[in-house]
Length: 83
Image: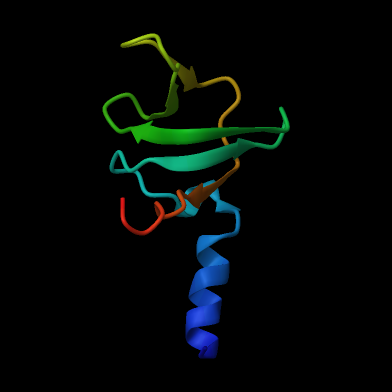
């Protein structure tokens, strides 16, 4: 495996500063350092200018991180092959 591929895999599997996160509605995992918590499948709500996490099982309900914005993000892992 080439060093370039290894670097790309390591980058995809590591936390990055929130400033580099996509802000187009792409689902990502976020981390809030002050809370020590990770939120999966989060997204940036461009129309509101905040990071959000939908609450499982409650359609239309979500948490908008305004008082405690995330500090880091990472891409979601790829699904298993054959799905």
